Amino acid sequence: MKDTITITQIKSKIGSTRKIRATLVGLGLTRMYKTVTRKNTPEIRGMIAKVQHLVRVEE
Picture (tube, rainbow, N blue to C red):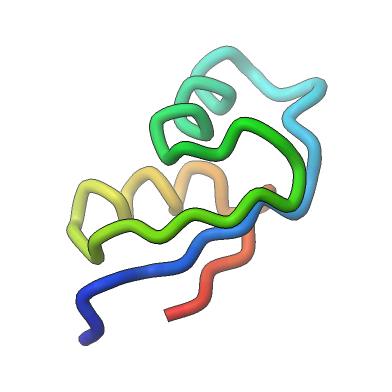
């Protein structure tokens, strides 16, 4: 398992619930097509699972 994960927001957060929006901000995704690199931890994996319909994940 790699140490980092690259996450890109590919869909808009418009129309999403407040929790989904907060999860995106927690991941550091504040706008469309922004890419961030995070450590591969269970906490980050859980956040990605909640917003998997809005993001693309590359390991």
